[in-house]
Structure formats: C-alpha cells, structure tokens
Image (cartoon, rainbow, N blue to C red):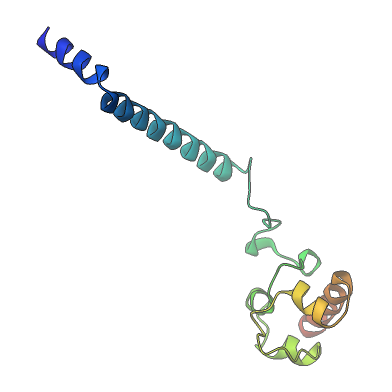
Length: 126
C-alpha cells in the first residue's frame, strides 16, 4: 500500500511524467532500431548503393559510385593501371569516384564505365 501511494505521488508531479515519457521513448527507439537491423540483415532494406557485394562483383556490375581504389582492390589491379590506361591526371586518384572522373573528363557515366570495363577485361584477359 505504501508503494502504491509512493508511485501515485511520483506521477502526480511533472517530473514523474517526464521520466515515464523518456523511458517509453527509449523503449520505442530500441524497438525501431532493432527492427531495422533485423530487416537489414534479412535483406528487406538495404543502403542506397548496395547493388552487389564484393564477393560477387563482376566487371558488368561496376557502378559510377565506385572508386578506382575499390576497383583496383576488387579486381587485383596494379595501383596505376587504370590511371595510366584511362589517362587520369586528377591528384585524388585512386580515391575518386568514377562519376566524378566522368564529369571532369566531360564524359557520360556510361562512357567511362565502358572504358573502365574494357581496361579491366584487357588486363584480366576476360
């Protein structure tokens, strides 16, 4: 009975309601984050650029958001191979995205993608 009176006293004060609301918000936030994680792990939701994983990336899956550094790593290319083959002079190479290089070279993304794919095929003899 004493405990019930104590609880009533707490929730008759504004601070009691603030504490309760804060706890409920934290619980709801936890449920949302946990649910999002489960959806992400099961593949129901995914990041904006998640088109393929590195394990099954093929030359045909190369996308404009990828960097030359990423392509060099995935396809095991020498660091300067794409730079020399595609005549890239940007000092940010290899940490530059293909789409950024396409703009600088005044090419369409698809044109640079095609040139990059061809260069990798030539190196790998695909």
